[in-house]
Image (tube, rainbow, N blue to C red):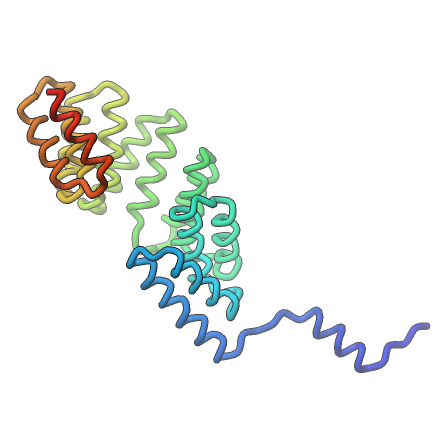
Length: 248
Protein backbone atom coordinates (compact mmCIF):
# COMPACT_ATOMS: atom_id res chain seq x y z
CA UNK A 1 0.00 0.00 0.00
CA UNK A 2 1.32 3.45 -1.00
CA UNK A 3 2.13 5.63 1.98
CA UNK A 4 2.65 9.37 1.54
CA UNK A 5 5.07 11.34 3.62
CA UNK A 6 3.29 13.74 6.01
CA UNK A 7 4.79 16.72 4.15
CA UNK A 8 3.14 15.52 0.92
CA UNK A 9 -0.16 15.05 2.71
CA UNK A 10 0.03 18.64 3.98
CA UNK A 11 0.87 19.94 0.50
CA UNK A 12 -2.10 18.07 -1.02
CA UNK A 13 -4.41 19.40 1.68
CA UNK A 14 -3.25 22.95 1.04
CA UNK A 15 -3.81 22.53 -2.69
CA UNK A 16 -7.45 21.71 -1.97
CA UNK A 17 -7.97 24.64 0.38
CA UNK A 18 -9.36 27.90 -0.89
CA UNK A 19 -7.35 30.96 0.00
CA UNK A 20 -9.10 33.06 2.61
CA UNK A 21 -8.19 36.75 2.26
CA UNK A 22 -6.36 38.27 5.19
CA UNK A 23 -7.65 41.37 6.92
CA UNK A 24 -5.04 43.38 5.05
CA UNK A 25 -6.19 41.94 1.71
CA UNK A 26 -9.84 42.62 2.53
CA UNK A 27 -8.99 46.19 3.48
CA UNK A 28 -7.06 46.66 0.24
CA UNK A 29 -9.95 45.19 -1.76
CA UNK A 30 -12.35 47.68 -0.17
CA UNK A 31 -10.02 50.58 -0.94
CA UNK A 32 -9.69 49.60 -4.62
CA UNK A 33 -13.46 49.06 -4.80
CA UNK A 34 -14.16 52.56 -3.48
CA UNK A 35 -11.62 54.09 -5.88
CA UNK A 36 -13.26 52.14 -8.71
CA UNK A 37 -16.69 53.49 -7.80
CA UNK A 38 -15.38 57.05 -7.72
CA UNK A 39 -13.78 56.61 -11.14
CA UNK A 40 -17.02 55.16 -12.50
CA UNK A 41 -19.04 58.10 -11.18
CA UNK A 42 -16.63 60.47 -12.90
CA UNK A 43 -17.05 58.61 -16.21
CA UNK A 44 -13.57 57.09 -16.28
CA UNK A 45 -14.68 53.55 -17.00
CA UNK A 46 -11.22 52.18 -17.86
CA UNK A 47 -9.79 53.35 -14.55
CA UNK A 48 -12.85 52.00 -12.73
CA UNK A 49 -12.45 48.60 -14.36
CA UNK A 50 -8.75 48.47 -13.46
CA UNK A 51 -9.42 49.30 -9.81
CA UNK A 52 -12.23 46.75 -9.53
CA UNK A 53 -9.98 44.09 -11.01
CA UNK A 54 -7.39 44.89 -8.34
CA UNK A 55 -10.10 44.60 -5.71
CA UNK A 56 -11.05 41.11 -6.92
CA UNK A 57 -7.43 40.02 -7.09
CA UNK A 58 -7.19 40.71 -3.36
CA UNK A 59 -10.62 39.28 -2.50
CA UNK A 60 -12.01 37.07 -5.30
CA UNK A 61 -15.35 36.60 -3.51
CA UNK A 62 -16.08 40.29 -2.89
CA UNK A 63 -19.75 40.49 -4.03
CA UNK A 64 -19.94 44.29 -4.34
CA UNK A 65 -16.88 44.35 -6.61
CA UNK A 66 -18.32 41.58 -8.81
CA UNK A 67 -21.58 43.50 -9.08
CA UNK A 68 -19.83 46.78 -9.92
CA UNK A 69 -17.56 45.24 -12.55
CA UNK A 70 -20.59 43.47 -14.03
CA UNK A 71 -22.30 46.83 -14.52
CA UNK A 72 -19.24 48.14 -16.36
CA UNK A 73 -18.96 45.06 -18.56
CA UNK A 74 -22.64 45.19 -19.47
CA UNK A 75 -23.27 48.90 -19.94
CA UNK A 76 -19.86 50.44 -20.69
CA UNK A 77 -18.04 47.69 -22.57
CA UNK A 78 -20.98 45.73 -24.08
CA UNK A 79 -19.68 42.36 -22.88
CA UNK A 80 -22.85 40.85 -21.44
CA UNK A 81 -21.66 37.27 -21.02
CA UNK A 82 -18.72 38.40 -18.90
CA UNK A 83 -21.09 40.58 -16.91
CA UNK A 84 -23.33 37.55 -16.29
CA UNK A 85 -20.38 35.59 -14.91
CA UNK A 86 -19.57 38.36 -12.43
CA UNK A 87 -23.19 38.76 -11.31
CA UNK A 88 -23.39 35.02 -10.76
CA UNK A 89 -20.22 35.11 -8.65
CA UNK A 90 -21.68 37.96 -6.62
CA UNK A 91 -24.78 35.86 -5.96
CA UNK A 92 -22.72 32.79 -5.08
CA UNK A 93 -20.97 34.88 -2.43
CA UNK A 94 -24.21 36.56 -1.27
CA UNK A 95 -27.40 34.78 -2.43
CA UNK A 96 -29.66 37.57 -1.13
CA UNK A 97 -27.85 40.34 -3.05
CA UNK A 98 -30.92 41.92 -4.67
CA UNK A 99 -29.02 44.59 -6.64
CA UNK A 100 -26.97 41.85 -8.33
CA UNK A 101 -30.16 39.90 -9.08
CA UNK A 102 -31.67 42.97 -10.71
CA UNK A 103 -28.52 43.69 -12.71
CA UNK A 104 -28.30 40.09 -13.89
CA UNK A 105 -31.97 40.30 -14.86
CA UNK A 106 -31.20 43.47 -16.83
CA UNK A 107 -28.75 41.49 -18.98
CA UNK A 108 -31.33 38.76 -19.52
CA UNK A 109 -33.92 41.41 -20.42
CA UNK A 110 -31.57 42.86 -23.05
CA UNK A 111 -31.01 39.32 -24.41
CA UNK A 112 -34.79 38.70 -24.67
CA UNK A 113 -34.56 36.02 -21.95
CA UNK A 114 -37.74 37.41 -20.45
CA UNK A 115 -38.85 34.57 -18.19
CA UNK A 116 -35.41 34.32 -16.57
CA UNK A 117 -35.36 38.09 -16.09
CA UNK A 118 -38.84 38.18 -14.53
CA UNK A 119 -37.94 35.40 -12.09
CA UNK A 120 -34.93 37.37 -10.83
CA UNK A 121 -36.84 40.66 -10.63
CA UNK A 122 -39.59 38.96 -8.61
CA UNK A 123 -36.98 37.51 -6.26
CA UNK A 124 -35.55 41.00 -5.71
CA UNK A 125 -39.04 42.34 -4.99
CA UNK A 126 -39.47 39.77 -2.24
CA UNK A 127 -36.54 41.38 -0.40
CA UNK A 128 -38.06 43.94 1.96
CA UNK A 129 -34.64 45.62 2.32
CA UNK A 130 -34.16 46.12 -1.45
CA UNK A 131 -33.71 49.87 -1.80
CA UNK A 132 -35.01 50.37 -5.38
CA UNK A 133 -37.97 48.01 -5.88
CA UNK A 134 -39.49 50.30 -8.52
CA UNK A 135 -36.66 49.37 -10.91
CA UNK A 136 -37.45 45.67 -10.70
CA UNK A 137 -41.20 46.39 -10.86
CA UNK A 138 -40.81 48.58 -13.93
CA UNK A 139 -38.53 46.12 -15.70
CA UNK A 140 -40.95 43.27 -15.03
CA UNK A 141 -43.49 45.40 -16.88
CA UNK A 142 -41.19 45.95 -19.84
CA UNK A 143 -40.40 42.22 -20.01
CA UNK A 144 -44.13 41.43 -19.95
CA UNK A 145 -44.72 43.92 -22.76
CA UNK A 146 -42.02 42.32 -24.89
CA UNK A 147 -43.72 38.98 -24.24
CA UNK A 148 -46.98 40.42 -25.57
CA UNK A 149 -48.75 40.77 -22.20
CA UNK A 150 -49.57 44.46 -22.58
CA UNK A 151 -52.26 44.82 -19.91
CA UNK A 152 -50.10 43.23 -17.20
CA UNK A 153 -47.12 45.25 -18.43
CA UNK A 154 -48.93 48.56 -18.05
CA UNK A 155 -50.19 47.59 -14.60
CA UNK A 156 -46.67 46.69 -13.44
CA UNK A 157 -45.04 49.87 -14.74
CA UNK A 158 -47.80 52.05 -13.29
CA UNK A 159 -47.13 50.40 -9.93
CA UNK A 160 -43.46 51.34 -10.32
CA UNK A 161 -44.13 55.04 -11.00
CA UNK A 162 -46.63 55.11 -8.14
CA UNK A 163 -43.88 53.83 -5.83
CA UNK A 164 -41.43 56.38 -7.21
CA UNK A 165 -43.06 59.37 -8.96
CA UNK A 166 -39.64 60.42 -10.21
CA UNK A 167 -38.98 57.16 -12.08
CA UNK A 168 -38.24 58.55 -15.54
CA UNK A 169 -37.78 55.22 -17.31
CA UNK A 170 -41.20 54.10 -16.15
CA UNK A 171 -42.93 57.10 -17.71
CA UNK A 172 -40.87 56.73 -20.88
CA UNK A 173 -41.78 53.06 -21.25
CA UNK A 174 -45.47 53.76 -20.63
CA UNK A 175 -45.33 56.41 -23.34
CA UNK A 176 -43.69 53.97 -25.74
CA UNK A 177 -46.25 51.24 -25.00
CA UNK A 178 -49.22 53.55 -25.53
CA UNK A 179 -47.62 55.00 -28.68
CA UNK A 180 -46.94 51.57 -30.17
CA UNK A 181 -50.44 50.34 -29.32
CA UNK A 182 -52.10 53.38 -30.90
CA UNK A 183 -53.28 55.31 -27.83
CA UNK A 184 -51.65 58.63 -28.72
CA UNK A 185 -53.36 60.78 -26.09
CA UNK A 186 -52.09 58.52 -23.29
CA UNK A 187 -48.69 58.28 -24.97
CA UNK A 188 -48.33 62.07 -24.99
CA UNK A 189 -49.55 62.27 -21.41
CA UNK A 190 -46.89 59.87 -20.18
CA UNK A 191 -44.15 61.43 -22.29
CA UNK A 192 -45.21 64.67 -20.59
CA UNK A 193 -44.75 62.99 -17.20
CA UNK A 194 -41.33 61.80 -18.42
CA UNK A 195 -40.38 65.38 -19.24
CA UNK A 196 -41.72 66.69 -15.92
CA UNK A 197 -39.80 64.06 -13.93
CA UNK A 198 -36.58 64.56 -15.92
CA UNK A 199 -36.61 68.18 -17.13
CA UNK A 200 -32.93 68.11 -18.14
CA UNK A 201 -33.22 64.99 -20.34
CA UNK A 202 -33.45 66.00 -24.00
CA UNK A 203 -34.93 62.64 -25.03
CA UNK A 204 -38.06 63.44 -23.02
CA UNK A 205 -38.70 66.57 -25.11
CA UNK A 206 -37.91 64.69 -28.32
CA UNK A 207 -40.45 61.93 -27.57
CA UNK A 208 -43.12 64.34 -26.38
CA UNK A 209 -42.62 66.50 -29.47
CA UNK A 210 -42.88 63.54 -31.84
CA UNK A 211 -46.10 62.49 -30.10
CA UNK A 212 -47.50 66.02 -30.32
CA UNK A 213 -46.85 66.04 -34.07
CA UNK A 214 -48.94 62.87 -34.43
CA UNK A 215 -51.78 64.64 -32.59
CA UNK A 216 -51.43 67.70 -34.83
CA UNK A 217 -50.24 69.94 -31.99
CA UNK A 218 -47.57 71.69 -34.04
CA UNK A 219 -46.91 74.69 -31.80
CA UNK A 220 -46.43 72.47 -28.75
CA UNK A 221 -44.17 70.23 -30.81
CA UNK A 222 -42.12 73.24 -31.89
CA UNK A 223 -41.56 74.18 -28.25
CA UNK A 224 -40.61 70.59 -27.39
CA UNK A 225 -38.07 70.27 -30.21
CA UNK A 226 -36.58 73.68 -29.37
CA UNK A 227 -36.08 72.60 -25.76
CA UNK A 228 -34.71 69.27 -26.95
CA UNK A 229 -32.05 70.98 -29.05
CA UNK A 230 -31.10 73.29 -26.18
CA UNK A 231 -30.75 70.47 -23.65
CA UNK A 232 -29.16 67.79 -25.84
CA UNK A 233 -25.71 66.75 -24.64
CA UNK A 234 -24.64 64.89 -27.78
CA UNK A 235 -24.31 66.52 -31.18
CA UNK A 236 -26.22 63.67 -32.82
CA UNK A 237 -29.27 64.22 -30.62
CA UNK A 238 -29.00 67.99 -31.05
CA UNK A 239 -29.03 67.49 -34.83
CA UNK A 240 -32.08 65.20 -34.61
CA UNK A 241 -34.00 67.81 -32.62
CA UNK A 242 -33.07 70.57 -35.08
CA UNK A 243 -34.03 68.43 -38.06
CA UNK A 244 -37.46 67.69 -36.60
CA UNK A 245 -37.95 71.36 -35.72
CA UNK A 246 -37.09 72.45 -39.25
CA UNK A 247 -39.51 69.85 -40.69
CA UNK A 248 -42.54 71.43 -38.98
